[in-house]
Length: 175
Image (cartoon, rainbow, N blue to C red):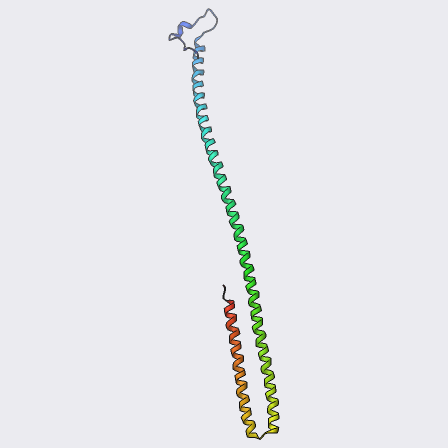
């Protein structure tokens, strides 16, 4: 840009012109050195900016990937919630079906108990009628038969209760 000062700067000194050129050329040389340093700093800053821009691009790509993953996770969470609700609904339906089956079994048990009570009452009435109509020996035989029938009824009732308990146990096992 500027030519360097001559080797012998003392020859440039002129007292006649009113100023000395030596400090001027020294200042120009310092300014050129500072300009070189500033250019080097500028080039380094440009390089840092280019690196930073590449890093920003990479970060934007990473953010995009993360946003897609978050979207996928949100979809997975939503699907899991739907599945959980579906499972709860199915479980509630099974519980209702189980309760209905238990109620049916209990109702059948109650009906059997009522039939047994009616049969016992009829046996008692027949026993009284037989005592008045037949000799005591015959009544004892009938009484024995009626007791056996009552025991069979109790056994039937116990079988029904065990069947209900077994069915309740089967229904309470999760599917």
